[in-house]
Image 1 (cartoon, helix red, strand yellow):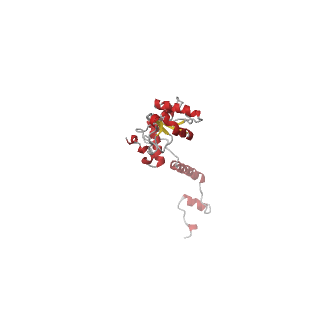
Image 2: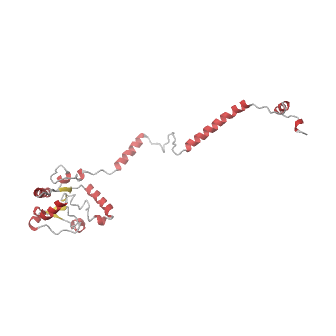
Image 3: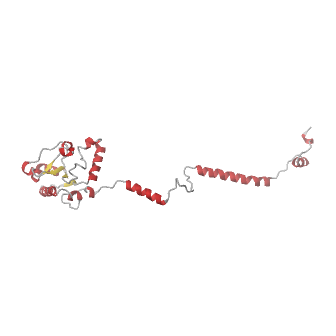
Length: 237
C-alpha cells in the first residue's frame, strides 16, 4: 500500500494528512525546554574547567592544607631563627683603614695589652719613616674564626690545605688576642727589618702579615719561622 493512502495512527500524523503531508511543530515550547538544559551543561563544563586549572585553590577550609595567620607567623619565626647570625665588628671584623690606635674597634681593643703596646710603639716610629700600620685582622671571636675556617676549606678544597692558612677556634692566636695581621706591604717590610726591637715577630713563612709578641726577641732576635701553621706545635692540640 502506498504511504499516501495509509491510515494515520496518531494525532500528529492525522493533522499532517489534513495539511498535505506537512508536519506541525511547536518550536516555542521545545526551545523553552532545551535552553535550561544547555545552560546547566555549560555551567557544569565551566566549573569543571576552573577546578582543573593549575592555579585554582579551593576556598573551602581544610585542616590539612589551610594555615591560620598565627601558623604562618610561627613558621616565619622558625625560618628567621634558623638563619645564621651576621658577623661584624663585634666578632672581630675590622673596617678598611683600621689602625693600631683605633680603640673603638673590638678587633684592636681586645688584643693582648702587651702586644698592643708594642704595636703602637712600632707604629709611632714607623710613621716617622712615612710608613703607616693598617690592621687587617686582630682579635676574633670563636664564631668568626669558625666562619673563616669554613670559607678556607671551601676555597682550598680540604681541611688539610685550609689549615695552612686558618687555625681552628681552639688553637688560633687571633681568638686569644695574641696575633695581628698587618698591612700594607711597606708596613710588613718595615716590621720585618725592625720588628724584633719591639718584640714583634713574623711567625709563619707563608704569612708575612701575621705578627705575634715574642718579648725575648728584643735581646735575642726573633725565633726561626714555621713554614706554615701546620708545623706549629700549638696547632696540634
